[in-house]
Length: 233
Length: 328
Image (cartoon, rainbow over the protein chains, first blue to last red):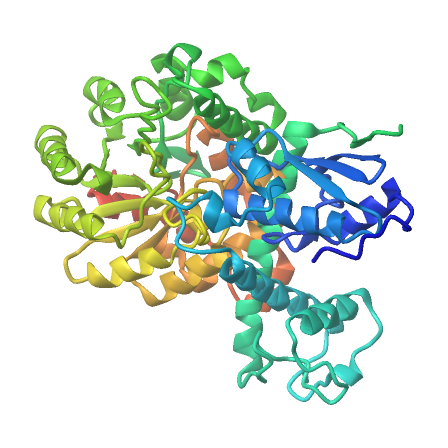
């Protein structure tokens, strides 16, 4: 995922780094790590970028923590003009292992060889599919209409919920044409029983949202009032 | 006993601890990280007037626990669920031996439970037999993310786990409390996924084992409910969900609605997770709680006084054969 780097490009700015990090999400919560307040520091020194982040608890799962660290590194290295990225996880039980391994460009299965049976692609996929279901449920709830069975993507209104849903459809490689049915499973297949589908989807949404509320509350206890810092300020 | 309008409600607190996280008992930074994490849960979800100082939270005296549960907290019987953490704390965090001290002094007030760790293999099977003989336990608490040397956890479906569950059947230990944590083997999979409960619940249903999933699978409520629908011997422990009633009441209502819809009021069990939270305010707020109108309309569900009585005590009393006074 590293972008083109030539010395002709000008060095990155802090705002470019923040914009890149905004696209990094917490996979469990389907929300930007910047919006969640996790990023505590961004600093740029020439062509080298340093970012630090912290999480709601000391015990947040190391696999999700790893994904955020690795995605942040990829996002920074993809900025034109960046030559080095230094990503630092702080206040976490596996902070040192994750920080060292991610900055060395090692894979999760290398770093945790004796504790893992493979990489994190499947874990990521499972949570993108949950996010798909949640975004779809939010969209359909916002429509507040009964006849959802024949609904197509082309008939969706212009709304934040619709945009979020279309974005994850595209991300998962699903049919995004106007004729495509709007109510599908995460494989893009139309669902037979819309009501049963929605009831399960609602449960997934409530699980994600109550988890988000808990995580945000715990984060607030740990870091309430602490602003992110940047090298230039 | 909670009394309202002339009616008495029998209260079983399905998950209580008598822990020691004092600095003297801490072995390493993980011990400090553990109790500070608990403390953040405590502070974030408790009403202000129920927040303790950290020092008390690390280690509280017996009389404080007795007062919070039985004098102020309406609790009739508390169920101890040990959490050993011997890699973090010298004498363990909350062991059956610690809990037994209170059980001996107040035999009718507590249910004592044990635990096992399949990584202890043959040695641990002997300990489980000894605990069964000595304490007559009817249940065990399993913390699958417990660290042990280089291992960061285990699965319920491991071959040695099955041998321990077989032993539970043999010893009449029928209540298997499962708590999923952030690190299990293998670390690349979702540690909170409760799918292994599905497999063992099916395998041990005819043998009579019941699986009580602590904090009803949160943060994977949806996976838990889906399993509970299919497995009649799977129950939800309401620890961690209960305090939402104060700090996040809308989410409490939504989560309760889902649990009532998918699992039903016969398989939900009240728990404070003391000393994470105190039963007094949880019981009071739960007795006052009603499902919001929009959720009632959407689902056709209601949470009646009868439902609350089951959740607050009768369901746990059935699982543990606790005598319920005729007045309750």
